[in-house]
Image (cartoon, rainbow, N blue to C red; front, side, top):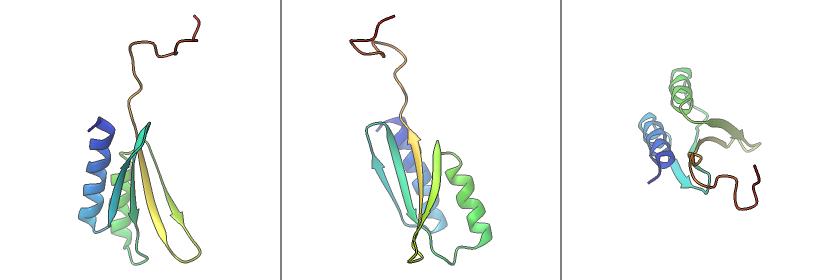
Length: 92
């Protein structure tokens, strides 16, 4: 598993420990974590949640008019530092 997947899995595990059901997905350029957030989450638990997702490269909260709230976090995969990064048509 790429480092981004390991980081995303660690974030998901910590959110699960707080009591939020999570899912992790691998994408081409990043790994993502999503968690459903109940309305009854206390202020103390929100602080813990924010500490956890602050380890991600990006995070946010999607709230709908039906009171559904999904927390998301993204961990980017490392960009290659060697090789033909610019691609075959890249000119210096």
